[in-house]
Amino acid sequence: MIALDAVLPFVHLPRDASSSVRVDLQRVREAQACARRLLRLPWVAVLEASSTHLDESERAMLADGAPPDPFLLIMACDHGWLLHVPTVTGPNAPLGPGLANLFAFAARQKIAYVRIDDDAPLVPDVVVLS
Image (cartoon, rainbow, N blue to C red; front, side, top):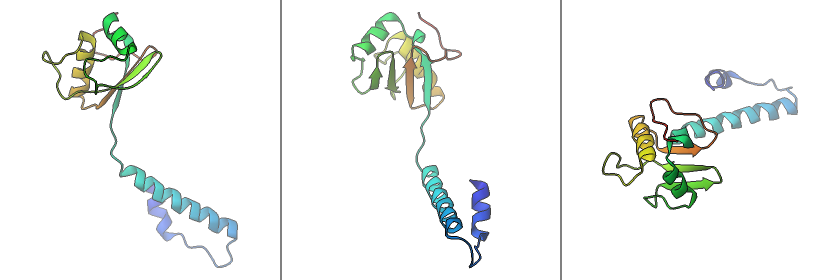
């Protein structure tokens, strides 16, 4: 992207340039404009964590679609869940021990979402409960 930003302003086609070269240059300029728009989007981090960080009751609760906070569960599939990290974490949060540990870790890292999946890696420094 930086290279395109540096070079494209200086690209001037000769009058006898083929139409395909002109089309290609226009496509590059459109791609550059699209990349600039994407870079202005707000990006959020997602922590990917193994379901072994949760205890059996937490996994059952999520599988049933009944998290302790209705705004916690964003998306569910057969073996995984996407959860929004709540603003309240710690001992007062109505969470099980695994979710509390994952959310506390995510909050310290300023991560907005946690994706829990059977095939996801273990998160270092977060307790494994099953």
